[in-house]
Image (cartoon, rainbow, N blue to C red):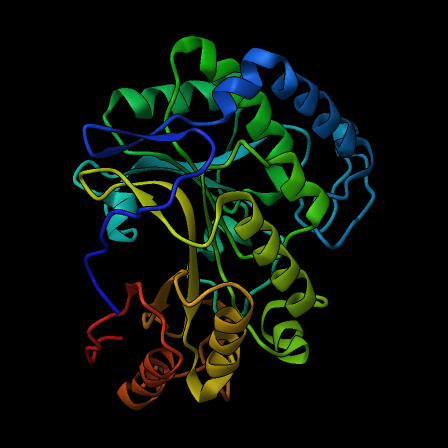
Length: 331
């Protein structure tokens, strides 16, 4: 597992070489010019009248203020937006990733470290036009990309914001930073729009996913979503000459105490069904937060032995690229 990835050699639509350096043009620009982006915005917004954006398929009329599982309405809610330097190196680079944190979530993770945002719904309601302005403002700050964090329940609003931002000169790669609990219909709305998928592969067991995160049928939805993301952007990262991600896939996996995440099983599936070339971010930062405090299984930090076991699985399965962490006591 390398900690400093090299520039990918494969090409994909919108990618070419100039003087030996990889150049990538966001494909959403051509969709905007052809009118396809506007058509997708119209279709996506119609879904809000009987929302099926996530696998819960609540069917509520969010356009008229009804609230489903995510508890969000017609307008996007943003809890924070800024240049973030704590993402994987090809995303943060030297100038940061332009993160936009959305309020609400399609999960109920007992251990959520962002629970004031996801569960207590702290944030500010904005219009799609204002969301587009935030994207443009972050671009002017010099960030490498726009990183939509927990975006699934706001896909129509994100597309509408993009429709507003492009005429203002917006042209950065878009990152879809998600729990990996997605429907294929929603992901297909994003085909040719999202440049970099950053999904979790949280669990290998549906019963555990239900108990710890409130997910229904997580494993099947997650694996179908990962395959679709891979189909859209490929299994590898395309990096520019400075090592900054332009297009591709990074899969995150948070190691949990007592092997609750099924780490070896998750990694085995990734190796056998995506590619051993996929970039894997194996995370060790678990600690008891929110409702995990005092929990009989989740109520302690990860141990060095548990993380070493996860690392061993990663190495044994032959993954070529990605990131691991130096385990320290404070984890």
